[in-house]
Image 1 (cartoon, rainbow over the protein chains, first blue to last red):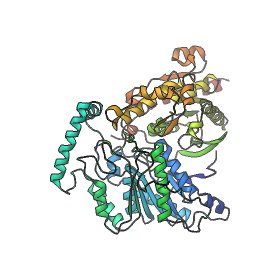
Image 2: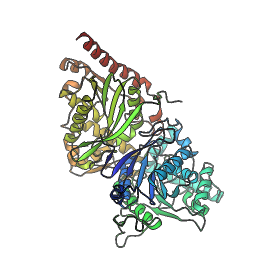
Image 3: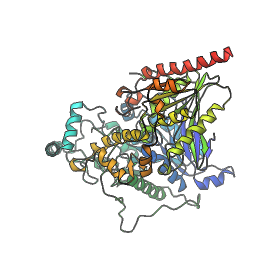
Image 4: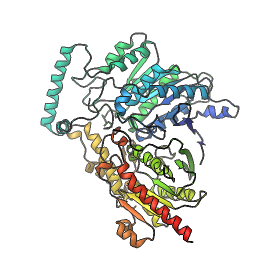
Length: 335
Length: 275
C-alpha cells in the first residue's frame, strides 16, 4: 500500500485530538519543487468540507474531480472528513443537521485549516462547502484566520425541517404527479406569495439569524466569496420559487457595496452539482474565480490556464438548460 | 438517541493506495495486532457507496474492536480510487477482489479470511468465494445478478429525481431502463452508466449454489451466511433519510454477524490446536 500516488497524497491531521483523514491533491508545479524541499509555499489552497453526512468524495465523486482540476491549475487542494464522517475518527452528532446549522463543525474546520496552512506553508485557504457543507464553511471562515475566501454551493440561510410529516410528503408527491395537484401547488405558492408581500422585507420565522450574522461579518469585511446556485424546485432562473423568500438577494444586501461576492447561476446543474453539466460548470466557475482573486503570479508558471468561456456564452450561464434533480438527503429538501 | 458502537480510541486505521492495472485502489486497513480473523469488505456499488458509507465504516470498526482485522476499499473508478468509472468492467472489479484477498491473506499471522459483500459487492464476493477464495462468506442482501443491483440503485435515484420534476417531466425507472436497452448511456447520481455495464449486468450472476444457505452448505465445505436486509437497515439498503439513518444504532445487525465471524475464527483455532 502506498501513501501517495502521482498527484494525490493521503494526509492525517492529528493535532486536533481526533484523527482527521484527508486527501491532498498536489499541483504539478509543486511536485517538481518537492525535490527541492519546498512544498506549497505562499500559495492559496482550497479546503473541501463534507456535505452533510457524505464522505469527502461527495456525490458522484464530484469533489475528487474538482480538487484534481483545481490542483492541475496550481492550487493545492485538500479534502477532509470532519469528525464522525467518512474515514475520520470521532462520532458525529445524531442531530447532525441541527449541529451543522449551529456551526458545530466550525472549530474543528478552522483548526484543520490552520494545521494545513502551517504544514504546507500556504498563504491561506479558500474554504469550499456544498449545501450543509457551505454552512460549515461559512461558520469556519469566521472562526479561522487562515480563511482567505469562500466557495459556497447552494448555501441555505434557513433552518430546514429534516423530517417532514409523511402526509406532507405524500401531498407533495401527488402535487408533482397530477395536473390537479399542480394547480393546487400553484395556488398554494400564490397564497404564500401574498403573505410574503404582506410581510415586506421581514425575515421568515425559520431564518437562521446566527448564520446570516456570520455571513454579514465575512462578506461585509470583503472576503472574496463565490456563491453558486443550482435551479431550485419551480424556481425561475436564479430567482426563487413564487412565495419563497429571496435569501440570496437578502444576503447580498447584507454584504453591502464593498463586498466581493460573486453569484453565479449554474443552469443545468442539479442540487448535488454532481451531474456532468453541473460538475463541469462548477469546475469552470471555480477556476476562473480562483485565477481572478488569487492569481498565482510566477509561483507556478507551468500551471495550466483556466479554460475560457465559449464564444457567445455569458459569464452567468452554463451550457445546458434543463433543470435536474436534487439530493433527497439534502438539507434544502423540505424547505 | 446515541450511537451505540463507539470504537476504541487506539484502533489503527491506515488508508493507502493499492496498485492495480491502470489505477490505484483506495483502501483502509483496520489493523489489529493479533487478529483472530480477517475480513475483506466488498461494499455497495457507485452512489450506494456514499449512501451506506457511515454504517459500513462503523461495521469495520465494530469488527476491529474484537480483533478481527478488516480491509475495506473503493472499487476501481469509484470514490477515492482512481480510474475512469465508465471504462470499468465487472472483470476489473472481480480482479480487485482477488488481488486484495491475496494481499490480506498474505499478511503475517495466518488466520481465516472471510469475504463480506453487500449489494453488488455480494455478487463479487460470492464469485471470489466460488473460486476458492476465503474460509467464510457473509452476504448482505445479495442480488441474483448485477442487473438487480443496478435496478435497485436506479430505483433509488429515480425516486430522488422525481421529487424535483412535475407531470410529464417525471420519468419512471422503466423509461430509463428502456433508454439503456436501446443503447444510450445513462447518468445516475453522477456516474455515467455505459451500455456495456448494463448489458453485461444480467450475465454477471451470483453463483447458483449461493441462492440459499442450504444450497451453499451442500456445495461448499466452508461456512456461508446470507442475510436479507429489510428497510430497518437503511441506508445499507434503499430507504431512510441521509444524515439521520446512517447515524442510527446498528448493533442489532452487527452483533450476530460479528458472532458468526467469531465462530469461524474459533473453529479455525480449535482445528489448529487439534492438529
